[in-house]
Image 1 (cartoon, rainbow, N blue to C red):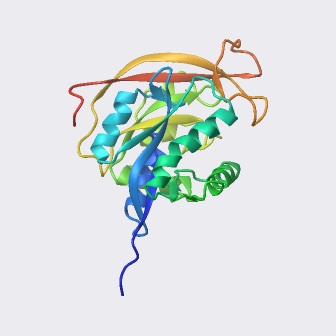
Image 2: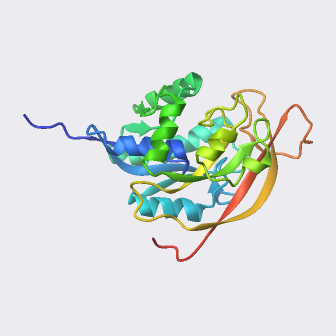
Amino acid sequence: MTRATPAPALLNWSGGKDSALALYHALRNPGLQVTTLLTSVNAHYGRVSMHGVRVELLEAQARRIGLPLTKLELPEMPDMAEYEQRMRATLAPLQAQGIQHSIFGDIYLEDLRRYREQQLAQLGMQAVFPLWQRPAADLLREYLDLGFRAVVVCVNEKFLDSSFCGRLLNEEFLRDLPAGVDACGENGEYHSFVFNAPYFSSPIPFERGELVRRTYQAPASSAATCPGPDDEPANSPFATGFWYCDLLPVGPAAP
């Protein structure tokens, strides 16, 4: 009996722990062949969208994984229509290569899953969720036991103060999380940068830079402007403050 040919797939790579753990499982799925990483990038700043990580470090991750990186380049404040148009344009050449599966690290946000599935279905593609509905404690234990290492690069100040930004994502960090904060940060409480993983050829060296606070104005509806930097006062009910830890590449660019 011949084994079915694995289906080519792209991995939606944020550079953080959930996408990294999703890739770990996707690489072990005999029905899938991950052929490229896809990352949304703020073209104005040259950084990963929302995570604020420099593109140089994103590229260092891709080199150590050994997979090509496709960048979805976005303006500073795209609306949903522009975002979806750019996504379709970015996916078109990947579809031409035979990619029909798109892998995500989402865990339990039902509305986000439905949105992804609906958008991909319009293009004849299928969404895959390797981590879906797994308990946070199980995911975090697996993350630590497998040797993943990450640093927290962004926190939402509605949930966490600036002292959490720039810390290693380890057991001590998890113990210090306030009550009500999702341990995996699934509600956007924090974002991370993975600097070592079981499938990296070597760890990524970096230095912690300055902490920066930025405010983002919430969109009025799903059709409104996507959240972006805004001059809204910090006490405005429409503004959310985020703290970012700038990570600085260290040493030669090549792994």
